[in-house]
Length: 238
Image (cartoon, rainbow, N blue to C red):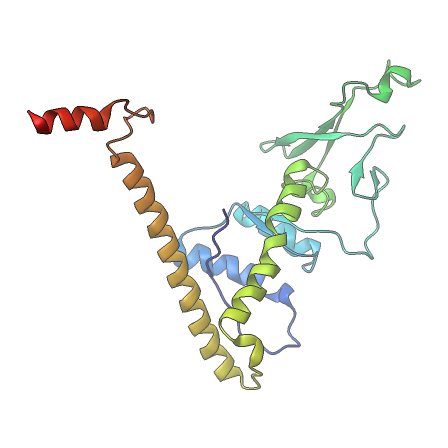
């Protein structure tokens, strides 16, 4: 399940782009909450690559976003993006060596093209790239990796739909605000409702877990205790 809770909210005029607020939001989390997310999943590449690199190097936060349509792919990528070697064999992400800052990609298919490649005797079948060669395609989590694709298509895709649902629930879709001060007040009220709902859901989940642990019909291994009710009836009758 996915639980949404607002951490930092900004109320600004409409002509101010979202790219201005990701880095200040992370700085606020670090300074005031003493906490930083491991991964930030964005909708599109709305921050420049230099800002993305500073976030990665300063706070070790991975920023995963889609490519903008006007971005050109490097030679080692096909549309998708899919990383391939010079002869067309698909390469999968093997991991990041954090100390040396090298991404490693290799051949993982059961029947690769390598068996009939004229360079197979001199090819290492593993290739390395620096994270800063392209912050979106490489970065901390390469865009072509299964991890990044699951984050973008299975986690990030819930955000807009959930925000739209909450907007209708709170009646905000029927309000036009032309005052920045009033917008800020409404933002605080909306965040308060979202935080109370998140706290209530978290408490309910915790209480449900505690209740299941204290249920006499289950033992500490999570197995049902057979003949429990019959035993209690016999005990009461005696």
